[in-house]
Picture 1 (tube, one colour):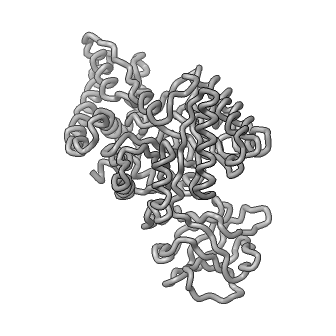
Picture 2 (cartoon, one colour):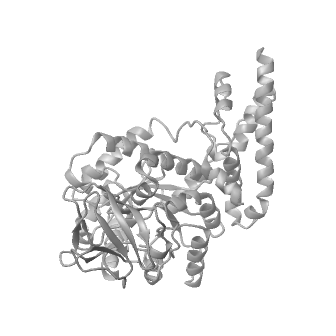
Picture 3 (cartoon, rainbow, N blue to C red):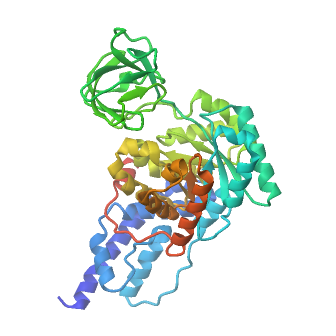
Length: 483
């Protein structure tokens, strides 16, 4: 087959792809019209990108690459325009250079503030209780590059939060730096309560093969039996035989053997803790179960007036679907702050699947950001899938011109011990593809922010974003099936 025939075949594939994208875009016009005017253009590009990513584009990419043309690998920000350029090249038409889109940078700067160094993302640092009484560490963090202070409403009280915020505002002003305040809503807390055996010590031994109960508050069990209560009511009835239950960040893994009205029988199939003890107040995850829980809890609603008065943005924890997003914005509207900046935290399997819906629903009210909350997310989807999913979230958000926060365990070992692992340095370099990177609290947080800044600066000078091989995305397929 000569080159002309090959090129005609490739051109037809690209034309067919373009036609399919245009049809999906037209079908989505009613959805796009519901959005705020400033979000319609990004949403249109987002849907075009999703439409393309339903397909396996790798064979087309290989053919384009062999011709020395754009393989569409970095086309998230303006996919259809990039596709048109390639088609024009093959048709030997005049090529007009595209204007590079900077909408993502504008949205990021609007939400997070402009970073002090254009080569690195904004840096967020999680506060601990002691910061309320320590102006020096806050001043040093701001001096070293902290652009966003994170306060988790799951800890402390309003008077402590206010001390942290006042010290942040004052110190930023004194050294002529900008530092925004971000506050996390806790969301539904699903924590362990040790009942029955081990209740006195608030911990229980769980070895592989151990059988125990997961129970509602008033369930029947014997005092010598291992019974683990749940801090959120109504979960037991939603569980099914054969589903997985994880405790303490996945250190303990159990399978459901039998279900009853107010309890389920579990068998422990993994015990990774050195001593094998499960303590009270540890997290519980149900990766196989789509739980019907309110993402906006009564405690969250009680926190909102303070957050809206004192913070610059809020984080919405354990958001699952578009109804959750509507509920938050309706509450914000009732409190007189309908346009308050919102970060949607992606930390469940359901949130990953529903990501396009979450983004487009939030675009009805404002321009959101997305946090890849890698702690709970890794537990929910499996650690082996985290690398894949966090990249998919980055691609999708870039297509929607939505900023991303890369969160959880960034330079964690350095932060805790003063010395980084090699793998976490590589992970921190990967974080340069996001618009903001979050460091957790720790005794070596100053060293952690200095090291992070150095890693991001070096990596940011080498590249911006990436080149992908575009296999089909399940997230894209799911979106069009539902809509």
